[in-house]
Length: 198
Image 1 (cartoon, one colour):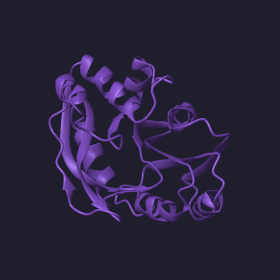
Image 2: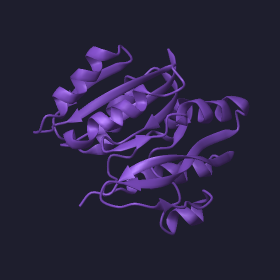
Image 3: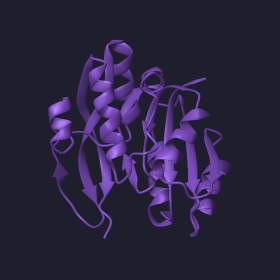
Image 4: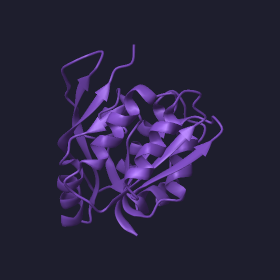
């Protein structure tokens, strides 16, 4: 068991993957595992992932034939051991205090379903994406939180994870709406960093 399972699906993201994994490895909070799941990449993502597995036993590596991000996340979460889950795409990264501060929030109140962050872009775009409070209406109107948000594994199990029929980025929107339907609190707190792919 560990406190947080960081789930990193990747597909041909070798250019960003080391930076992503280094952002996990440099966390001020240490009770985590990071499951890197390679969704059939044909670049050097596997070599990058295995480098981190060899450096730090908290990293684990899985490979699957290309099935898409929904299957990758669900398959990795199925073998995870954390109380909390943090999805983190292979071309994104998190602030070094991300886990420390967000776990403290979740531990303080069992009614909190989700901690999510304002987003700061890097690489092809700069600036910040200001997110709105998480409600079903806001989420349906275009989304108000990004997939890199901390939630409880038990809530993931209750809502049935990410739906396999959801594609093109709406799987996380659907998942968060399911969490909203459960009630509880949703906290915007920290920041994470997102690439904008050209």
